[in-house]
Image (cartoon, rainbow, N blue to C red):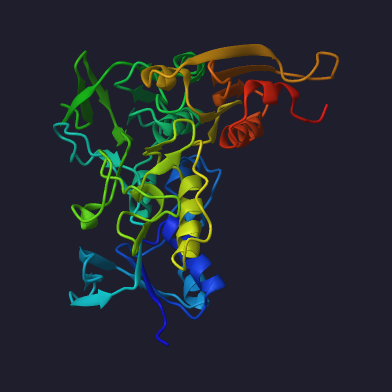
Length: 426
């Protein structure tokens, strides 16, 4: 009996997790991984830790080593670019980027783990030498080399990466300006009120935050620095980092499987695309977002690892269903912890859901304890069936694990009444 052949396109977190599952559970499987970079599974979300010296070596930011996958039995082909996929014939055209040789390969099952790219906004001068994107290993090295004594850095976009970069530079006491075209930061993850707290903290640490200010151009200034043009004003800095979100790398399957408006691959409960031989995981595909019951594009590393593992299991049949996600995430912002799960109040209002929210401000533990800290909790729930939809947490105490608890409760369809009486330690 012929061995099943699985091709994984992309050695991202998702691709690596898929390969591990396949080769651990079914070591007889023929697994080929095509990766166009010369390294695998780079943790781009940790670049800011490298810049501030928390992580000493950029090489520590790889989720897996090539030798580990080869040892498991994978054929790992780095610097190989997939040019074309024919989903009907179950074939693909690949080029060896070192030799230029083009060849055809065939699969029984295909796992798309092609990840995402930084959205390159249509801004005049975006290709200026002092304007950097930051997603992969080479870009991170370029960013590190560009660090100079007291350089003034502008960060364009205030999602997770942009906010973390701003915090990193501020903590190194370098001047930093943060531009956000929206009226708040982290707008896909937190409410306006939580954003106000986070922006206040950034400004306390001398981050020059500009909300509702869209960057329209980059040019060289008269003194050879970088001039940033916005609708409101012009600014001169030494370096700009563009962090304006991510777009899924799915061009290879365009017109061959179902995609959402972002171009992200639509998946079912077994991370299978509309073509039953093709599975998808990570930033290339949607998540099944439990608070709304609808697919959503939420590129987070935790989603990628889970979906990748499930793809590696389910290529052998509908074995382990995907539970979906609440997009639970957390970040450290200076001395504060910000954690979030599920829907924000703003997003629920936009979706016209029957919702209310409760906001608690108080101590995280009783005042008779030797130390405590203030905590703000924002809870979003449906008023028709009292089901929990989302929560956010803000405190100098590390309260991040509380978001995991609420995440599980949203996952299970629990109500605010369940939350009031669920067993937790005193």
